[in-house]
Image 1 (cartoon, rainbow, N blue to C red):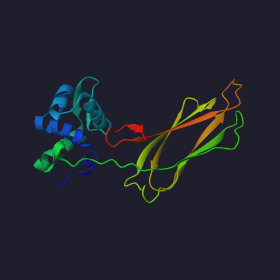
Image 2: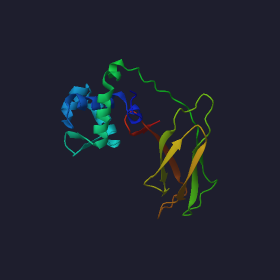
Image 3: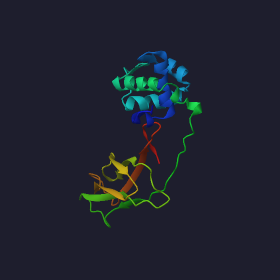
Image 4: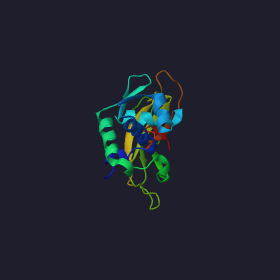
Length: 202
């Protein structure tokens, strides 16, 4: 029997947490018991239990008890039906992380008029032959302006494939009441990690 598609997207450590529930025959467990049963460090447990919570496999009341959701129970049953067909973490092939290069392009007007809204263009060039992505990457783009708006930051999400892509953000140079004649634009890009389920520097 083949592993369900949703479980294939989980890192091995998250699978081991679900295996723990299957082995114990329980739908809830204390964090300490899960760490010991799945062979995870406190830091590793924190990362991968958050991944399971984010994707709806387990839930927590804010304490140290984690309960399986309906999706979690179905996934545990699927693991039970696989039996010995699923490998333990030490038996699985090592995951290889492949890095690709993509050029970030930021387009701004030649001049920024004070207190006049305009648009900032943020995008990526098309991938080269050696930098093709197997699957699209989920990106989080954060834009900040010093002496302008959005001063508190504006976030965009972008699905990056091997094709060129872009988005526009409205900006306004010149903070209210400021006499400074220049504005500084800061763009930060993060990628959604398949391992932690969080946006990380890329």
